[in-house]
Length: 430
Image 1 (spheres, rainbow, N blue to C red):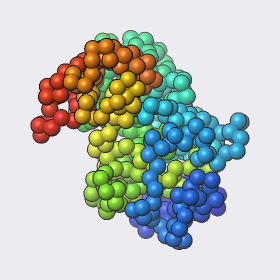
Image 2: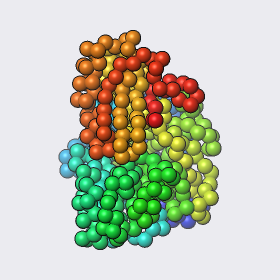
Image 3: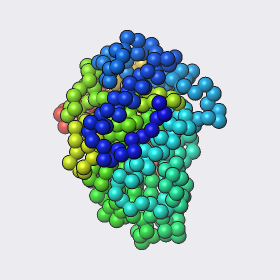
Image 4: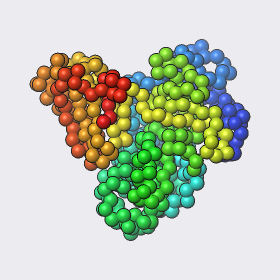
């Protein structure tokens, strides 16, 4: 079957969404039965079943990083010239190079265009792409492809530009739309001094992290723009959902013709029914590049049968942030496992020995790593600090203009920061 996105996605009935999704699920399972890795994962999977079982193996970010070395997931025999390889953020300690086929990447672009069209914001005419450029970044390439498909005047600006220079470009070329992360948009709204230079700006589309209502209101009050998500998406999976005009910033219509979503209990890993909060697993349909089956996104979400925002009958997914094993800092995902792995290179450590503290707001962040003074010596602290600052993901976070300070400190565990429930979490924002 030649893969095609559902043309009438916005008008399809719930039954039509389900029937098409079931068909794609069956075809995807049939495709993966001959896959060198997934054939073992799917051993004994019932023919004709349109859902996974609780015991069907889950693909985690750490497992994916281990598999990336020999790339057994890729279905492309010779990636040179026939695919596009991008890298994830490196949140698990090793950047995951993912090779998408050109057909699958074009599908990602088409889904991004769907998100722009569904937003009900005036169609962009001139777009500044302010995602992080280079470094095999998926977001920048995604934004570039959408601009090409829309046929807009395109400005590959990148994320390193200062507010004054960006304002000059926007004013000179009458740019009406920005593609950026929520952190970039907030920082721009806070730091921009000559707001008149942004007068042509009408909309901001974001990916990379959740946009809070409070942040959106602040950005809108400063820049007088409409704000929508460019998709709920990851470099590995492509667009999972999109927002219509009425969606809250934490809610997305599911792309039933591109992905299969499950919500599982974080502890038992049992599949939860709609209306229950848990970890988000995603399977990509008929992915002929690097297919993903039950990939754990690290997000917390809940599926709703219907929405109150429009007449679309696709299900929606509401997001609640990251799982306890990770957090977001300046749109970068920081995993607990990464911190523990780096520290354990010097001294074997558990999550009871460390606390990661993120202080301040989006424009003046301070990142602090607390080490239990009963376990770590001053000399070991110095070695650990050097290891952390040399790590790829920490290096990227620390280099952001919003991060004013980074330090590693010894402190007795009893003096670690407490949550409102008087617990001592691994990650704490204060």
